[in-house]
Length: 120
Image (cartoon, rainbow, N blue to C red; front, side, top):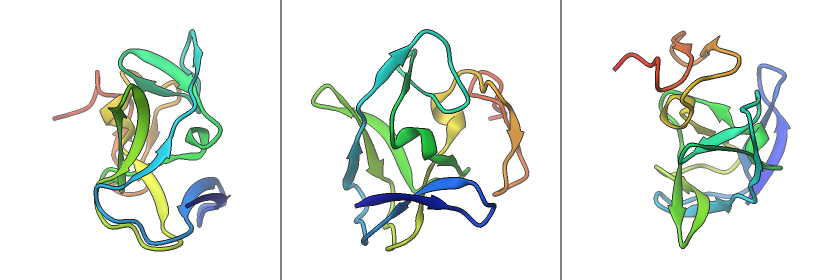
């Protein structure tokens, strides 16, 4: 259902290999918990983890997915319909307290630095 390939910006991202329905669980993370955040880690419930797919998920202010817990597993759920070959994104400001490498997003030119600093 997911593949890793280069984005238009010549970075790597996660893309759908088929159409995905809104609300569908599209990935179950296999977290490797770490002590400190990295540029590719994901924060959930106050803990940081690395994941083989998660490390390639890019930010978007209007993301296609969200990160949730289901049956004690951390999952990636579609927030809307996702088309085949569309990049899978999530909003870093929704999960990360602090971004280790703040950046201006390509979607809205907004500074992404984590939810503790995000402008509401």
